[in-house]
Image (cartoon, rainbow, N blue to C red; front, side, top):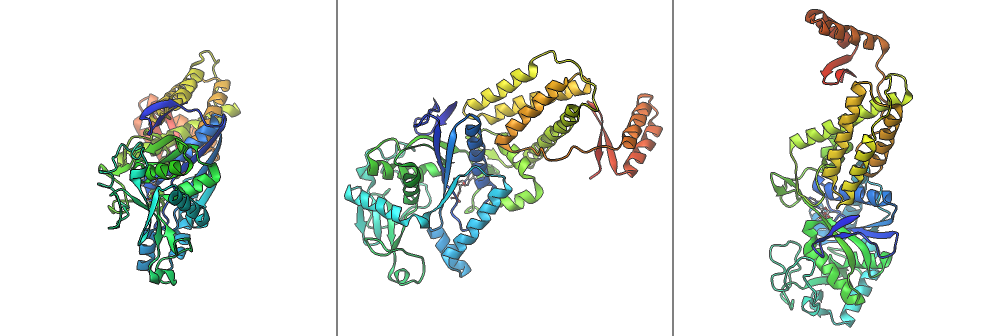
Amino acid sequence: MQIYNTLSGKVETLSPIKKNKINLFVCGPTVYDYTHIGNARTFVVFDMFVNYLKHLGFDVFYLQNITDIDDKIIKRAKEENIAPKDLAIQFEKEYMADMQDLQIKSVKKYARATEHIKEIISQVERLLQKDFAYQSSDGIYYDVSKFKEYGKLSGRTVEGAEDGTSRIDESVEKKNKADFCLWKLASPAEASGGGGPSWPSPWGRGRPGWHIEDTAITEKYFGPQYDIHGGARDLIFPHHEAEISQMEAISGKSPLVKYWMHTGFLTINGQKMSKSLGNFITTRDFLKETSPQALRMFIFSSHYRSPIDLKDSSIQEAKANVEKLQDLISKLTIAEGGSLLPFGRKEVPSFLSLQEKFWQELEDDFNTPKAKAVLFEITNLANEKIAKNELAKTEAEEILDFLKEVNKIFLFLDFKAKPEKIPENIKELAKQREGYRQAKEWQKADQVRQQIESFGYSVEDTAEGPKIEKSK
Ligand code: AMP
Protein backbone atom coordinates (compact mmCIF):
# COMPACT_ATOMS: atom_id res chain seq x y z
CA MET A 1 0.00 0.00 0.00
CA GLN A 2 0.98 3.66 -0.34
CA ILE A 3 1.23 5.87 2.71
CA TYR A 4 2.05 9.53 3.28
CA ASN A 5 5.18 9.96 5.39
CA THR A 6 5.48 13.27 7.29
CA LEU A 7 9.26 12.76 7.41
CA SER A 8 9.72 12.77 3.63
CA GLY A 9 6.62 14.81 2.82
CA LYS A 10 5.81 12.20 0.18
CA VAL A 11 3.51 9.27 -0.43
CA GLU A 12 5.65 6.12 -0.20
CA THR A 13 5.19 2.38 -0.59
CA LEU A 14 4.77 0.78 2.80
CA SER A 15 7.63 -1.65 3.19
CA PRO A 16 8.28 -2.73 6.81
CA ILE A 17 11.76 -3.24 8.25
CA LYS A 18 11.05 -6.95 8.72
CA LYS A 19 9.09 -8.33 5.79
CA ASN A 20 5.69 -9.05 7.30
CA LYS A 21 5.94 -7.57 10.76
CA ILE A 22 4.94 -4.01 11.64
CA ASN A 23 5.86 -2.33 14.90
CA LEU A 24 3.57 0.65 15.37
CA PHE A 25 3.52 3.19 18.20
CA VAL A 26 0.92 5.87 18.90
CA CYS A 27 1.21 8.49 21.63
CA GLY A 28 -1.41 7.65 24.20
CA PRO A 29 -3.24 9.91 26.63
CA THR A 30 -2.05 12.03 29.52
CA VAL A 31 -4.37 10.67 32.16
CA TYR A 32 -5.70 13.67 34.10
CA ASP A 33 -9.15 14.10 32.53
CA TYR A 34 -11.73 12.35 30.33
CA THR A 35 -10.96 11.95 26.62
CA HIS A 36 -12.77 14.22 24.20
CA ILE A 37 -13.91 13.30 20.72
CA GLY A 38 -10.85 15.02 19.21
CA ASN A 39 -8.68 12.47 21.00
CA ALA A 40 -11.22 9.81 19.99
CA ARG A 41 -10.76 10.70 16.32
CA THR A 42 -7.03 10.01 16.47
CA PHE A 43 -7.42 6.76 18.41
CA VAL A 44 -10.23 5.53 16.13
CA VAL A 45 -8.20 6.34 12.99
CA PHE A 46 -5.25 4.26 14.23
CA ASP A 47 -7.56 1.46 15.32
CA MET A 48 -9.03 1.34 11.82
CA PHE A 49 -5.60 1.58 10.25
CA VAL A 50 -4.16 -1.27 12.35
CA ASN A 51 -7.20 -3.44 11.55
CA TYR A 52 -6.60 -2.63 7.90
CA LEU A 53 -2.89 -3.60 8.09
CA LYS A 54 -3.99 -6.91 9.60
CA HIS A 55 -6.48 -7.33 6.74
CA LEU A 56 -3.51 -6.89 4.36
CA GLY A 57 -1.79 -9.77 6.16
CA PHE A 58 0.72 -7.89 8.35
CA ASP A 59 1.53 -9.07 11.83
CA VAL A 60 1.13 -5.79 13.76
CA PHE A 61 2.42 -4.97 17.23
CA TYR A 62 0.47 -1.86 18.24
CA LEU A 63 2.02 -0.19 21.28
CA GLN A 64 0.67 2.84 23.13
CA ASN A 65 2.12 4.68 26.11
CA ILE A 66 0.15 6.06 29.00
CA THR A 67 1.54 9.34 30.34
CA ASP A 68 0.79 8.82 34.01
CA ILE A 69 3.32 11.34 35.32
CA ASP A 70 3.29 14.92 34.05
CA ASP A 71 2.91 18.54 35.23
CA LYS A 72 -0.76 18.55 34.19
CA ILE A 73 -1.46 15.50 36.35
CA ILE A 74 0.34 17.04 39.33
CA LYS A 75 -1.53 20.36 38.91
CA ARG A 76 -4.95 18.73 38.60
CA ALA A 77 -4.26 16.39 41.55
CA LYS A 78 -3.40 19.42 43.68
CA GLU A 79 -6.67 21.12 42.67
CA GLU A 80 -8.62 17.98 43.53
CA ASN A 81 -6.60 17.43 46.68
CA ILE A 82 -5.70 13.84 45.84
CA ALA A 83 -2.43 12.05 45.15
CA PRO A 84 -1.23 12.38 41.50
CA LYS A 85 -0.92 8.60 41.36
CA ASP A 86 -4.57 8.12 42.35
CA LEU A 87 -5.72 10.71 39.81
CA ALA A 88 -3.71 8.97 37.06
CA ILE A 89 -5.10 5.54 38.00
CA GLN A 90 -8.66 6.88 37.97
CA PHE A 91 -8.32 8.51 34.54
CA GLU A 92 -6.47 5.57 33.04
CA LYS A 93 -9.54 3.49 33.97
CA GLU A 94 -11.82 6.08 32.39
CA TYR A 95 -9.65 6.05 29.26
CA MET A 96 -9.88 2.26 28.99
CA ALA A 97 -13.66 2.48 29.43
CA ASP A 98 -13.85 5.03 26.60
CA MET A 99 -11.70 2.85 24.35
CA GLN A 100 -13.98 -0.10 25.03
CA ASP A 101 -17.06 2.00 24.23
CA LEU A 102 -15.39 3.07 20.97
CA GLN A 103 -14.79 -0.65 20.24
CA ILE A 104 -11.01 -0.22 20.09
CA LYS A 105 -9.34 -3.58 20.63
CA SER A 106 -6.28 -3.32 18.40
CA VAL A 107 -3.74 -2.06 20.97
CA LYS A 108 -1.54 -5.00 21.99
CA LYS A 109 0.30 -3.29 24.84
CA TYR A 110 -0.38 -0.20 26.93
CA ALA A 111 2.84 0.91 28.66
CA ARG A 112 2.77 3.25 31.66
CA ALA A 113 5.59 5.80 31.90
CA THR A 114 5.95 5.18 35.65
CA GLU A 115 6.68 1.51 34.99
CA HIS A 116 9.63 2.41 32.75
CA ILE A 117 11.66 4.68 35.03
CA LYS A 118 14.70 2.36 34.82
CA GLU A 119 14.65 2.52 31.00
CA ILE A 120 14.17 6.31 31.08
CA ILE A 121 17.15 6.80 33.41
CA SER A 122 19.26 4.56 31.18
CA GLN A 123 18.43 6.77 28.15
CA VAL A 124 19.29 9.97 30.04
CA GLU A 125 22.59 8.43 31.17
CA ARG A 126 23.51 7.49 27.62
CA LEU A 127 22.65 10.99 26.36
CA LEU A 128 24.90 12.50 29.02
CA GLN A 129 27.71 10.09 28.17
CA LYS A 130 27.47 10.99 24.49
CA ASP A 131 27.40 14.69 25.35
CA PHE A 132 23.91 15.32 23.93
CA ALA A 133 22.68 16.36 27.38
CA TYR A 134 23.82 18.62 30.22
CA GLN A 135 22.91 19.12 33.83
CA SER A 136 21.57 22.38 35.26
CA SER A 137 20.37 23.18 38.77
CA ASP A 138 16.82 21.92 38.14
CA GLY A 139 17.40 18.94 35.87
CA ILE A 140 19.02 17.30 32.88
CA TYR A 141 18.40 18.95 29.51
CA TYR A 142 18.85 17.85 25.90
CA ASP A 143 21.15 20.14 23.92
CA VAL A 144 19.45 20.50 20.53
CA SER A 145 22.47 22.26 19.01
CA LYS A 146 24.37 18.95 19.26
CA PHE A 147 21.91 17.07 17.05
CA LYS A 148 22.62 18.17 13.51
CA GLU A 149 19.34 16.91 12.11
CA TYR A 150 17.14 18.70 14.65
CA GLY A 151 14.04 19.94 12.79
CA LYS A 152 14.02 17.28 10.06
CA LEU A 153 10.47 16.16 10.87
CA SER A 154 8.81 19.52 11.51
CA GLY A 155 10.98 21.80 9.41
CA ARG A 156 11.61 24.03 12.45
CA THR A 157 15.00 25.53 13.14
CA VAL A 158 16.81 25.41 16.47
CA GLU A 159 16.30 29.17 16.83
CA GLY A 160 12.61 29.35 16.00
CA ALA A 161 11.88 26.09 17.65
CA GLU A 162 9.73 26.98 20.61
CA ASP A 163 7.54 29.68 19.13
CA GLY A 164 3.84 29.03 19.33
CA THR A 165 3.99 25.69 21.11
CA SER A 166 2.73 24.53 24.45
CA ARG A 167 4.42 22.23 26.95
CA ILE A 168 7.75 24.08 26.79
CA ASP A 169 10.30 23.41 29.46
CA GLU A 170 11.06 26.78 30.97
CA SER A 171 14.46 27.25 32.54
CA VAL A 172 16.72 30.27 32.65
CA GLU A 173 19.77 28.03 32.53
CA LYS A 174 18.95 26.42 29.19
CA LYS A 175 21.69 26.70 26.57
CA ASN A 176 19.30 26.93 23.61
CA LYS A 177 15.72 28.09 23.46
CA ALA A 178 14.59 24.68 22.18
CA ASP A 179 16.44 22.52 24.71
CA PHE A 180 14.02 20.27 26.54
CA CYS A 181 14.02 18.58 29.90
CA LEU A 182 14.91 14.89 30.14
CA TRP A 183 14.86 14.57 33.93
CA LYS A 184 13.28 17.09 36.30
CA LEU A 185 14.95 17.23 39.69
CA ALA A 186 12.55 17.22 42.61
CA SER A 187 12.36 20.25 44.86
CA PRO A 188 13.39 19.54 48.48
CA ALA A 189 9.66 19.35 49.40
CA GLU A 190 8.94 16.88 46.58
CA ALA A 191 11.99 14.79 47.39
CA SER A 192 10.81 14.35 50.96
CA GLY A 193 7.44 13.10 49.78
CA GLY A 194 5.43 16.35 49.64
CA GLY A 195 4.03 17.64 46.32
CA GLY A 196 4.75 15.68 43.14
CA PRO A 197 6.02 12.13 43.00
CA SER A 198 9.73 11.42 42.48
CA TRP A 199 12.07 8.51 41.86
CA PRO A 200 15.74 8.04 42.78
CA SER A 201 18.28 8.61 39.99
CA PRO A 202 22.06 9.13 39.67
CA TRP A 203 21.34 12.90 39.77
CA GLY A 204 19.04 12.88 42.80
CA ARG A 205 15.30 12.28 43.12
CA GLY A 206 13.21 13.50 40.24
CA ARG A 207 10.81 12.59 37.44
CA PRO A 208 11.03 12.16 33.69
CA GLY A 209 10.46 14.89 31.12
CA TRP A 210 7.60 14.34 28.68
CA HIS A 211 9.47 13.26 25.52
CA ILE A 212 11.82 10.67 26.99
CA GLU A 213 9.12 8.26 28.15
CA ASP A 214 8.15 7.41 24.57
CA THR A 215 11.63 6.55 23.32
CA ALA A 216 12.39 4.58 26.50
CA ILE A 217 9.22 2.56 25.95
CA THR A 218 9.68 2.03 22.21
CA GLU A 219 13.34 1.05 22.66
CA LYS A 220 12.30 -1.59 25.19
CA TYR A 221 9.63 -3.20 22.99
CA PHE A 222 10.85 -2.44 19.45
CA GLY A 223 14.55 -1.60 19.67
CA PRO A 224 16.21 1.55 18.26
CA GLN A 225 14.27 1.56 14.97
CA TYR A 226 10.70 0.67 14.06
CA ASP A 227 8.12 1.00 11.34
CA ILE A 228 5.31 3.45 12.10
CA HIS A 229 4.74 6.22 14.63
CA GLY A 230 1.39 7.97 14.83
CA GLY A 231 -0.37 10.79 16.60
CA ALA A 232 -2.28 13.93 15.74
CA ARG A 233 -0.40 16.72 13.98
CA ASP A 234 -0.04 18.82 17.14
CA LEU A 235 2.57 16.31 18.26
CA ILE A 236 4.91 16.76 15.26
CA PHE A 237 6.56 19.58 17.15
CA PRO A 238 8.12 19.58 19.67
CA HIS A 239 7.21 16.07 20.82
CA HIS A 240 8.05 13.88 17.83
CA GLU A 241 11.01 16.03 16.86
CA ALA A 242 12.37 15.47 20.39
CA GLU A 243 11.82 11.71 20.14
CA ILE A 244 13.92 11.59 16.97
CA SER A 245 16.68 13.70 18.55
CA GLN A 246 16.83 11.51 21.63
CA MET A 247 16.78 8.07 20.09
CA GLU A 248 18.90 8.76 17.03
CA ALA A 249 21.54 10.41 19.24
CA ILE A 250 21.56 7.41 21.57
CA SER A 251 21.66 4.69 18.92
CA GLY A 252 23.50 6.47 16.12
CA LYS A 253 20.92 4.85 13.83
CA SER A 254 18.63 6.73 11.51
CA PRO A 255 15.73 6.89 11.03
CA LEU A 256 14.16 6.10 14.40
CA VAL A 257 10.87 5.58 12.56
CA LYS A 258 10.42 4.66 8.91
CA TYR A 259 6.94 6.18 8.46
CA TRP A 260 5.49 9.06 10.49
CA MET A 261 1.70 9.31 10.26
CA HIS A 262 -0.21 12.32 11.55
CA THR A 263 -3.94 12.75 11.81
CA GLY A 264 -5.76 16.01 11.15
CA PHE A 265 -7.64 17.69 13.95
CA LEU A 266 -11.24 17.39 14.86
CA THR A 267 -12.34 21.00 14.89
CA ILE A 268 -15.37 22.82 16.17
CA ASN A 269 -16.28 26.03 14.32
CA GLY A 270 -12.92 25.65 12.60
CA GLN A 271 -10.95 25.61 15.86
CA LYS A 272 -9.04 22.58 17.17
CA MET A 273 -11.04 20.78 19.84
CA SER A 274 -8.90 20.90 22.95
CA LYS A 275 -9.09 20.82 26.69
CA SER A 276 -7.26 24.12 27.03
CA LEU A 277 -9.71 25.99 24.75
CA GLY A 278 -12.65 24.51 26.65
CA ASN A 279 -14.48 23.72 23.36
CA PHE A 280 -14.59 19.98 23.83
CA ILE A 281 -17.23 17.28 24.15
CA THR A 282 -16.16 14.24 26.14
CA THR A 283 -16.34 10.91 24.38
CA ARG A 284 -18.78 9.58 26.94
CA ASP A 285 -21.17 12.54 26.63
CA PHE A 286 -21.05 12.29 22.87
CA LEU A 287 -21.83 8.57 22.95
CA LYS A 288 -25.01 9.25 24.97
CA GLU A 289 -26.56 10.77 21.82
CA THR A 290 -24.65 8.98 19.06
CA SER A 291 -23.78 5.31 18.68
CA PRO A 292 -20.09 4.32 18.42
CA GLN A 293 -20.95 2.98 14.95
CA ALA A 294 -22.17 6.41 13.81
CA LEU A 295 -19.10 8.12 15.31
CA ARG A 296 -16.85 5.65 13.50
CA MET A 297 -18.78 6.26 10.26
CA PHE A 298 -18.30 10.02 10.76
CA ILE A 299 -14.54 9.50 11.18
CA PHE A 300 -14.40 7.08 8.21
CA SER A 301 -16.08 9.72 6.01
CA SER A 302 -13.03 12.05 6.05
CA HIS A 303 -9.44 11.46 5.08
CA TYR A 304 -7.33 10.85 8.20
CA ARG A 305 -4.97 13.73 7.34
CA SER A 306 -7.72 16.31 6.78
CA PRO A 307 -9.36 18.31 9.51
CA ILE A 308 -12.98 17.39 10.23
CA ASP A 309 -15.32 20.04 11.53
CA LEU A 310 -17.91 18.73 13.94
CA LYS A 311 -21.30 19.69 12.54
CA ASP A 312 -24.68 18.36 13.54
CA SER A 313 -25.50 17.77 9.86
CA SER A 314 -22.39 15.57 9.41
CA ILE A 315 -23.30 13.50 12.46
CA GLN A 316 -26.88 13.12 11.19
CA GLU A 317 -25.49 12.05 7.82
CA ALA A 318 -23.24 9.47 9.47
CA LYS A 319 -26.22 8.11 11.43
CA ALA A 320 -28.30 7.89 8.25
CA ASN A 321 -25.44 6.13 6.44
CA VAL A 322 -25.16 3.51 9.19
CA GLU A 323 -28.93 2.98 9.04
CA LYS A 324 -28.80 2.63 5.28
CA LEU A 325 -26.15 -0.09 5.54
CA GLN A 326 -27.98 -1.82 8.41
CA ASP A 327 -31.12 -1.80 6.31
CA LEU A 328 -29.24 -3.37 3.42
CA ILE A 329 -27.83 -6.03 5.75
CA SER A 330 -31.37 -6.89 6.91
CA LYS A 331 -32.58 -7.19 3.34
CA LEU A 332 -29.57 -9.26 2.30
CA THR A 333 -29.88 -11.52 5.34
CA ILE A 334 -33.48 -12.24 4.45
CA ALA A 335 -32.37 -12.66 0.85
CA GLU A 336 -29.61 -15.06 1.87
CA GLY A 337 -32.16 -17.18 3.71
CA GLY A 338 -33.90 -17.29 0.38
CA SER A 339 -37.38 -16.75 1.81
CA LEU A 340 -38.75 -13.39 0.84
CA LEU A 341 -37.36 -12.22 -2.43
CA PRO A 342 -37.45 -14.16 -5.64
CA PHE A 343 -34.00 -13.65 -7.12
CA GLY A 344 -32.89 -12.99 -10.61
CA ARG A 345 -29.85 -14.57 -12.21
CA LYS A 346 -26.42 -13.19 -11.63
CA GLU A 347 -25.28 -11.66 -14.88
CA VAL A 348 -22.88 -8.74 -14.39
CA PRO A 349 -19.69 -8.88 -12.29
CA SER A 350 -20.48 -5.32 -11.14
CA PHE A 351 -20.33 -5.98 -7.41
CA LEU A 352 -16.96 -7.70 -7.57
CA SER A 353 -15.36 -4.92 -9.56
CA LEU A 354 -16.78 -2.31 -7.18
CA GLN A 355 -15.43 -4.26 -4.22
CA GLU A 356 -12.00 -4.27 -5.84
CA LYS A 357 -12.27 -0.53 -6.30
CA PHE A 358 -13.11 -0.13 -2.60
CA TRP A 359 -9.92 -1.96 -1.56
CA GLN A 360 -7.85 -0.01 -4.09
CA GLU A 361 -8.96 3.29 -2.57
CA LEU A 362 -7.74 2.16 0.84
CA GLU A 363 -4.39 1.13 -0.61
CA ASP A 364 -3.91 4.72 -1.68
CA ASP A 365 -2.93 6.40 1.61
CA PHE A 366 -5.94 4.88 3.40
CA ASN A 367 -8.36 7.01 1.42
CA THR A 368 -11.51 6.29 3.40
CA PRO A 369 -13.74 9.03 1.87
CA LYS A 370 -13.16 7.61 -1.60
CA ALA A 371 -13.71 4.08 -0.27
CA LYS A 372 -16.92 5.32 1.33
CA ALA A 373 -18.17 6.63 -2.02
CA VAL A 374 -17.65 3.16 -3.53
CA LEU A 375 -19.32 1.50 -0.54
CA PHE A 376 -22.46 3.52 -1.15
CA GLU A 377 -22.29 2.85 -4.87
CA ILE A 378 -22.48 -0.83 -3.94
CA THR A 379 -25.32 -0.14 -1.50
CA ASN A 380 -27.36 1.81 -4.03
CA LEU A 381 -26.85 -0.77 -6.73
CA ALA A 382 -27.85 -3.59 -4.37
CA ASN A 383 -30.96 -1.68 -3.25
CA GLU A 384 -31.95 -1.05 -6.86
CA LYS A 385 -31.59 -4.71 -7.73
CA ILE A 386 -33.49 -5.81 -4.64
CA ALA A 387 -36.32 -3.39 -5.50
CA LYS A 388 -36.53 -4.93 -8.96
CA ASN A 389 -36.22 -8.48 -7.62
CA GLU A 390 -33.07 -8.83 -9.68
CA LEU A 391 -30.51 -9.64 -7.06
CA ALA A 392 -29.11 -13.15 -7.28
CA LYS A 393 -28.78 -15.11 -4.05
CA THR A 394 -25.05 -15.56 -4.69
CA GLU A 395 -24.73 -11.79 -5.04
CA ALA A 396 -26.52 -11.28 -1.72
CA GLU A 397 -24.01 -13.66 -0.11
CA GLU A 398 -21.09 -11.95 -1.77
CA ILE A 399 -22.14 -8.50 -0.60
CA LEU A 400 -22.75 -9.75 2.92
CA ASP A 401 -19.28 -11.35 3.04
CA PHE A 402 -17.77 -8.12 1.73
CA LEU A 403 -19.58 -6.00 4.34
CA LYS A 404 -18.42 -8.36 7.10
CA GLU A 405 -14.82 -7.98 5.92
CA VAL A 406 -15.17 -4.19 5.76
CA ASN A 407 -16.66 -4.17 9.23
CA LYS A 408 -13.73 -6.10 10.73
CA ILE A 409 -11.70 -2.97 9.94
CA PHE A 410 -14.11 -0.12 10.50
CA LEU A 411 -16.64 -1.50 12.99
CA PHE A 412 -19.44 0.80 11.98
CA LEU A 413 -22.01 -1.96 11.58
CA ASP A 414 -23.72 -4.38 13.85
CA PHE A 415 -24.13 -7.83 12.36
CA LYS A 416 -25.67 -9.17 15.54
CA ALA A 417 -28.66 -6.85 15.25
CA LYS A 418 -31.41 -9.23 14.26
CA PRO A 419 -33.23 -8.06 11.16
CA GLU A 420 -36.63 -7.17 12.41
CA LYS A 421 -39.25 -9.64 11.39
CA ILE A 422 -42.37 -7.85 10.29
CA PRO A 423 -45.46 -9.90 11.18
CA GLU A 424 -47.45 -11.31 8.26
CA ASN A 425 -50.62 -9.38 9.11
CA ILE A 426 -48.72 -6.09 9.01
CA LYS A 427 -47.20 -7.00 5.65
CA GLU A 428 -50.68 -7.89 4.42
CA LEU A 429 -52.02 -4.49 5.59
CA ALA A 430 -49.13 -2.70 3.90
CA LYS A 431 -49.94 -4.51 0.68
CA GLN A 432 -53.61 -3.51 0.95
CA ARG A 433 -52.61 0.10 1.55
CA GLU A 434 -50.29 0.05 -1.46
CA GLY A 435 -53.21 -1.25 -3.54
CA TYR A 436 -55.34 1.71 -2.38
CA ARG A 437 -52.51 4.11 -3.10
CA GLN A 438 -52.06 2.78 -6.61
CA ALA A 439 -55.80 3.21 -7.11
CA LYS A 440 -55.50 6.74 -5.68
CA GLU A 441 -57.99 5.88 -2.93
CA TRP A 442 -56.17 8.07 -0.47
CA GLN A 443 -58.71 8.00 2.34
CA LYS A 444 -58.76 4.22 2.48
CA ALA A 445 -54.96 4.11 2.22
CA ASP A 446 -54.82 6.47 5.20
CA GLN A 447 -57.18 4.37 7.25
CA VAL A 448 -55.02 1.30 6.70
CA ARG A 449 -51.92 3.31 7.66
CA GLN A 450 -53.60 4.19 10.95
CA GLN A 451 -54.42 0.52 11.46
CA ILE A 452 -50.74 -0.36 10.87
CA GLU A 453 -49.69 2.31 13.34
CA SER A 454 -52.11 1.01 15.96
CA PHE A 455 -50.12 -2.26 15.88
CA GLY A 456 -46.91 -0.33 16.66
CA TYR A 457 -45.50 -0.20 13.10
CA SER A 458 -44.99 2.62 10.65
CA VAL A 459 -44.94 2.64 6.89
CA GLU A 460 -42.84 4.98 4.82
CA ASP A 461 -43.06 5.38 1.06
CA THR A 462 -39.54 5.27 -0.39
CA ALA A 463 -38.19 5.20 -3.93
CA GLU A 464 -37.81 1.45 -3.50
CA GLY A 465 -41.43 0.99 -2.40
CA PRO A 466 -43.13 1.01 1.01
CA LYS A 467 -40.84 0.38 3.98
CA ILE A 468 -42.32 -1.03 7.18
CA GLU A 469 -40.60 -0.44 10.52
CA LYS A 470 -41.37 -0.97 14.17
CA SER A 471 -42.33 2.44 15.61
CA LYS A 472 -39.69 3.91 17.87
P1 AMP B 1 -3.53 14.18 24.92
O1 AMP B 1 -4.32 13.37 25.93
O2 AMP B 1 -3.86 15.63 24.94
O3 AMP B 1 -2.05 13.91 25.04
O4 AMP B 1 -3.99 13.69 23.46
C1 AMP B 1 -4.09 12.34 23.07
C2 AMP B 1 -4.07 12.22 21.57
O5 AMP B 1 -5.16 12.91 20.96
C3 AMP B 1 -2.81 12.78 20.91
O6 AMP B 1 -2.40 11.94 19.83
C4 AMP B 1 -3.26 14.13 20.40
O7 AMP B 1 -2.46 14.59 19.37
C5 AMP B 1 -4.68 13.79 19.93
N1 AMP B 1 -5.58 14.97 19.83
C6 AMP B 1 -5.75 15.95 20.74
N2 AMP B 1 -6.67 16.86 20.29
C7 AMP B 1 -7.09 16.44 19.07
C8 AMP B 1 -8.04 16.94 18.10
N3 AMP B 1 -8.75 18.04 18.30
N4 AMP B 1 -8.21 16.22 16.97
C9 AMP B 1 -7.52 15.08 16.75
N5 AMP B 1 -6.62 14.56 17.62
C10 AMP B 1 -6.40 15.22 18.77
